[in-house]
Image 1: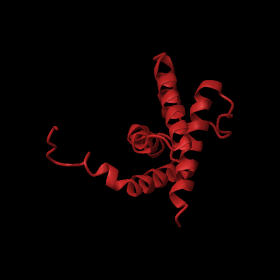
Image 2: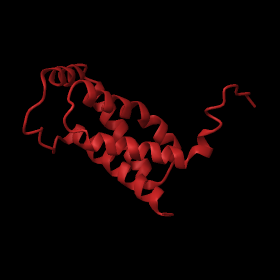
Image 3: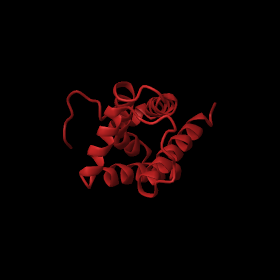
Length: 131
């Protein structure tokens, strides 16, 4: 059990590192069954911005590296949290199939956030006082 946080951190880091690299290198094939119309439109809209896919992929690669290197882990978890929310929203509303990896990502994120809960406690203070 004492190695579980390390395993979760490495697994989450690998997922974001690999999927982030895929955003730049496109080495993963698209789903064989195709994508629903709404999911296709959403993906095209992100690509047409010219900046969003590189920003998203770069964020995923950096977070993946931080998690794999065991550096700034709480910061990496905070930075990637909105990305995870959008991944889940995408799958719930636009592409309900393929929830296995997003579900795993949510579980790993929540487990690691719980593991680092003492670090997050000051951030969640209702009334913070500057020093």
